[in-house]
Length: 395
Ligand SMILES: *Cc1c(COP(=O)(O)O)cnc(C)c1O
Image (tube, rainbow, N blue to C red):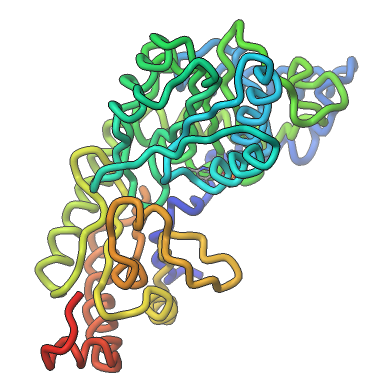
């Protein structure tokens, strides 16, 4: 395990020691149900409420606007379906983008089957939504705009404040999936006119299976999970106290040094992007550097398969991703790369590197060495590359 080089922080992060230490008492001695009246129950309640304050502070919300969930997917589902149900009598139209996470896209597809109409906005070559198209798409039946804060495959950060202003002007509710953004880039839900926000602890060095939603005071939505009165009746189920405590600690740590961390990560990312371009020919850089998460780099290596690249990197102890969740070995190219205009054949050779705080320049140099060697080897076995060399084919 020790010689693993981990470059997949957009998939998940390693929980930090201080987060584990904060959680430990609630995994052992303080096991009380946060709804119970006796002392160990109250101890859990206090810990949950302290974490809620920290999560709220991180995005400039009020504590009572934060509801804990089991993660980003649950938050996305609860908010989008909750708005759809609550506002059905007002309208049936939802606006989102073509590059959302499956937790948003699949939820929208489910709603389409139930009679909702969904507009999927285009993005430009950097992955930024077209604000004019957004304005033009709003109609009297529009009940929700759901646009992700930052993309999980290419890292693009959207003009969230502008989108929030457009939503407000048109009296449409605005949700943002900020799972990749929290802890990586500053967020102020009031200034940005955000009505709903989703986040997940394991993307910022917290534990897996715990997340939160921000729901602006005054906005009423239907609940997804019915049952007890936990989370002020918005999300039933006994609170995951250790997870929530860990999330509070993780978000406090991440948000106290966003600028410093972003400078460190973007330094490594920019070094990687520059060097990879110098060392390996026939590549396409899919991540922009002007509106992008600090640690994310997505590149296509022409004439090779991304999956083969991943396996060979794994053999060298390198953890990376093809950028898309290639579930069940499906070879469908990434919907995000296609949306920014990457040709299908080029998209197949894509790699997502997501750099984290424990990575060093030496790690990046090792990655660059391995990549140069592997890409050259894969190309030497590729019939497409041979055709390219013979002038019969060009990507
Ligand atoms: C990881 C991720 C999710 C899903 O979060 P989980 O906590 O794993 O359910 C949703 N949206 C984005 C953008 C993500 O990166």
